Length: 279
Image (cartoon, rainbow, N blue to C red; front, top):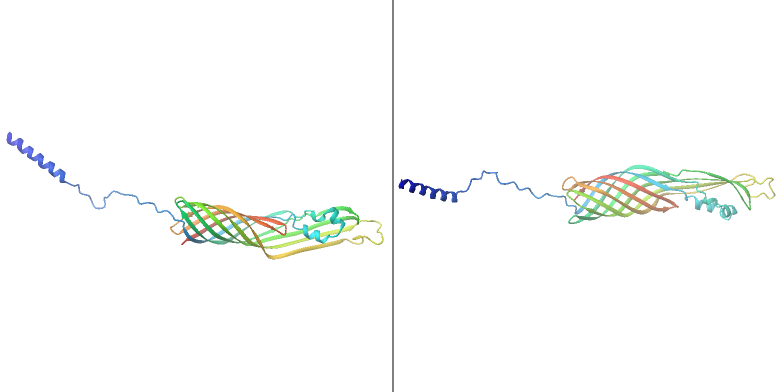
């Protein structure tokens, strides 16, 4: 019995020593999985791309004929007393047009803040034609009693434009929402004409006959210009999405307000879809 107890004690000591030195085998490829740090798109650097566009244009021609008629009726009591040049025979018109273009720019990034500068160009054709609403009135001044008809026509065709703009965005994952503000320049074909018809209704006709007593006087004037220079400001915003490490897509909206030209005020509402390459 004593021998059996001694043998069991010795076996326990040996098993404890083996357990202390034993390391469990690890099969090849069975290491614990640790996910890699996500590789997010970095927006810093130069970029360029192309775009398709669609926009709406609006122009107000209400005052476009004022200087033409005022000059045609200068030194007349009809203009000084009645103000024919102030009759608004033209109104506001809208149009829509598709187009295409491109962009190039540079971004810098601090943490999640992205700042940049971009040149954006659009080729399109916004042909805006003014509605004509002739005004006919019977007016009296010191020169006589006149049947007066005033009518006009005008058009504005914006051919292309470019915007130099600053951008500010907030990057999260592979998305970049951004806002823009900048200076816009463009080209437009302009045409404005006016017609004033006067008929003196004095009867009987005195001698000497007053102006326009024997036949209607038709006074027509106008002006045209090709590729007139436009300038204004632009504000907007959009969203860019990184598709690969160097390719991104964007969608955006931009509002462009042009400075008045020939007393015509106008603006554009632009939407764009584009694809770009970051270098």
